[in-house]
Image 1: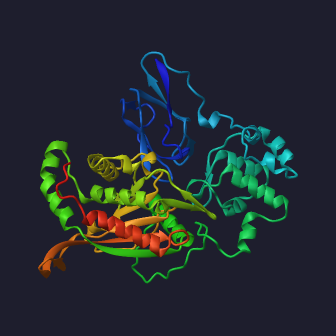
Image 2: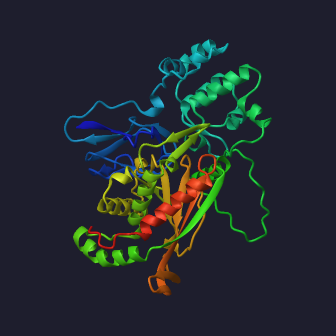
Length: 449
């Protein structure tokens, strides 16, 4: 018999850790190849970790709720034949000391040249990992963070006040070291922030008290809804939103789709919806107006090379997620349609991977799917714009012909774009929306797909 180390897999370039939310297998239970063993959560998406081998779950190395780094062993699976040597369980392992981590950390406290840091490094050589602890509100702290706090005499109350820069507001090692450094100079970051005007929303913002009127039901937000709430408030506090709206005549587009959809379904085995058609028009307009495809960092404008379209999708839980079509401008209409259907299906079945939600440069949302005419969406930071399209409805419209004006029944649709007024002015934003509408209105009805 051998031992296989089940590692937390790589989940995208920008994802370095995940929280283990639920073990799907218990010790001693058989595990099939490709069978999910544990559910995990990142700051973007929930997923699971399948086993690449068949065997029996021999040992679980991390408990539910603990944060694990990519590449770490999370469980041991006993398999037939020879395997790797077993690793020591997490409760028995000695954590790398802050001193050892700082030696390889270019952004560590060694470069700060703060009095007392050398003593901190010397005292943390004996830090041993303990179980992750939480405060009364369930906030997680890594074993290293908790150990440093204990060594430095930071009380639980102080630790709870430290603003975390990690996923879901989690306090990182660097947050604690920054706090210690600031305290050595007589004031903490939190004390300084308390004396300054609020500049951005954080989860530590005091909660507004709401009076219970009797019979009201209190529903606690789940993890994803909390992330959405924080993200939306932060976006409004970050970007001055401005909106432009265009009504597009998409009659030719509707007629073309009606003509090709049956053949497309028979050939490709899936439907062609309006979503990829609209996304194609957006990508073409982004090439025409590249200063829409930007992000803001301080007083710098980051002009994006890639056109990655985020596509808002509803989850079975009712929450919202935005999977991303990478390099959408490089895909054919068939490729776009397949990408849209694939992401939508995996979103509905909770099968999205963390990397599927990373790297978006512009977001599109189809509120017409809910029968809405138009809406004004909130920008998906750090992007600078988001477009919403409403339902396509038949309307009487005045058409100009060589024989004079006539009234005809046309298919109409509203396009609304919210954009960051720090970098996108009305002329640019309005011209972009108009260009998207032009591409949709002037659809080639003889196009072959």
